[in-house]
Amino acid sequence: MAKPVSNPKSRRVFDTDFKLQIVQMVKTQGLSINQVCKDMQLGESAARARLGQFEAEQSGQSGIGKPLTAENQRIRQLESENKQLRGDVEI
Image (cartoon, rainbow, N blue to C red; front, side, top):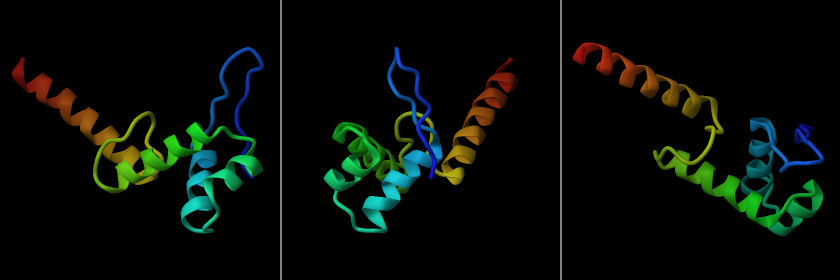
């Protein structure tokens, strides 16, 4: 099981695998958000944010933060490269 990367003096930061695990627990396993939060020692707002991000990505929107799925990570990378190349062509 993936664990959050933690620093005692700052906000907890979660890796992509941990975020996807939260989404899978709700979507695939059918657990409630409250149960997932309790099991993963996670605030409800963090869990809802991950679900919102995942749903946005699945509907074709860019979502917020680092993309969760490998496909969306690749899309974001290609969009960045495309933007750079368009800027190079204008020069």
